[in-house]
Image (cartoon, rainbow, N blue to C red):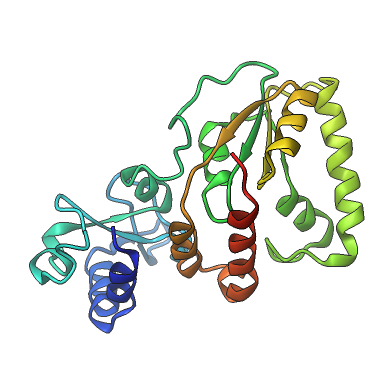
Length: 247
């Protein structure tokens, strides 16, 4: 898929107006027990309410949008060729963020290092495979937990505290301390030596979430969170990861 062509289309006024109309037309009206009326956006795949507006996705189906047909309005702007999807179902329909397997057999006390470039979908992969009672080590969430800042806003003066917390958690995972089920470590780990050493130290399995640079930059443009608001900073993170990555 030619993302430059697709991006131009999704940024265009025609698509924005079409998207708004689809959402408006398919809004579900509900009469609450107190007699009040509320409106909901429902995923047409899983039938769940989409409560976060930025998670509302418009998915082209049965004819997928491609660089060959994006300018054909009978496909790209056809209400009969789109469905409303939540973020999870939209990723599933496109087979995104699947890594080496869409669903893996998770072992009790299994340890998994989930790595790849920024914006490749590491956290999404973990959420789709983890179970309640698992432990997740994610630097972004550790920063948020101790600073109460927006996710991905990582105050530089806290980095040594965060590294200390991460190392303590990794030590507990290494010794299998605690009553957790499985452990997931999320990170970039562009350097092969560093990730292989960590995997060896923890007795962990490596899970690579593959994505090319253009795909990551495309997702950055549409993530609708702190990362998009600091696009230059995150573009640099993405470029640096691909510059330093070793298989």
